[in-house]
Every structure is written in structure tokens, then in C-alpha cells.
Image (cartoon, rainbow, N blue to C red):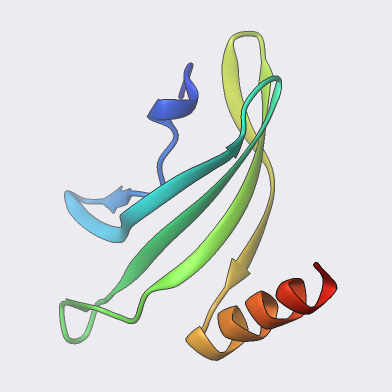
Length: 92
């Protein structure tokens, strides 16, 4: 369990194997409610290679000194990420 924002990660291991590899993270907001955007890759169990980079935006709430994930939104492709960026740029 993470007690600080810096400890929060996308890395996920199972049986000593890193199945989800965090490539980068950007803390978008800090506080009792924290928002972090992660760049990550999933391990393809058949090829033993990491797949394309994906993005996950996650919200955490700090309760009793520990951050717990409350919600997430995954961007599963480069095309979708570019559409989101284009839309935000048009709006702002």
C-alpha cells in the first residue's frame, strides 16, 4: 500500500514476472484526491515481449494514511490518444 504519491505505480508483478511495466508517470494533482497519468506496457505472455505503449489516468483517494485507487481511464491506442489531444486542443 502506498503512503505517498511518489510510491504509486503501474508496475504489476505476478509470480516474479513483471506483467505491467510503468514507463513514465506524471502527477496531475496532489492532495487527499490525487490524479496520475501513467505511460505503461503490458507483457505479451506468448512472446514474452512488451506490447505497445498505453496510457492510464488514475484517481486515488488517501484514507487512513494510504492511497487507494478510486477510478481509472485507459487509453489503449495511439490513435485514441491523438484524438483526445486534438479534441482538448480544439476546446482550449
